[in-house]
Length: 117
Image (cartoon, rainbow, N blue to C red; front, side, top):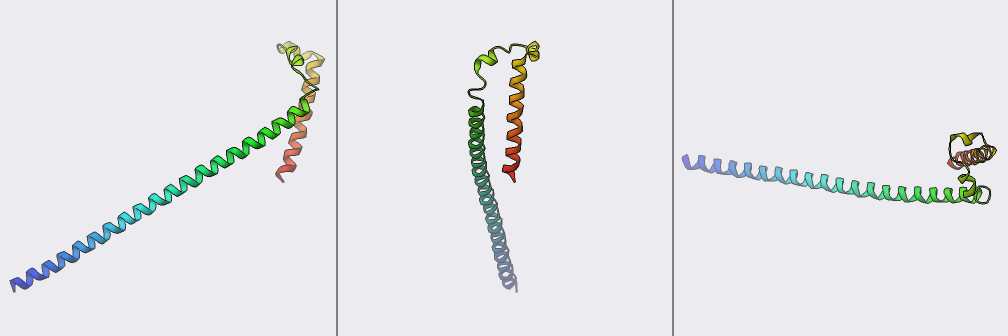
């Protein structure tokens, strides 16, 4: 009877060890899945961020070039050299430049509004 008890205990111990090993395999597999998913998410996010940044830079550069083309020839460095401090706000040159910049701003706000639609 004693040997039969030892055999049953041995079998139960083997089953228990097998269950523990299976459980640890599931834990390791789960952790590996989490690591793979986190890595994949990080790679996708960094790729998206890089693409979005490049797109914004391209769009902003094109917009700046368009403004430069509009302003070039109408307003020059000499005009800005004549504006030194706040008292120059009363000069006609300052008012003309300010008015022109407001027109450009209005034009681009309308353009961007239509572009977003």
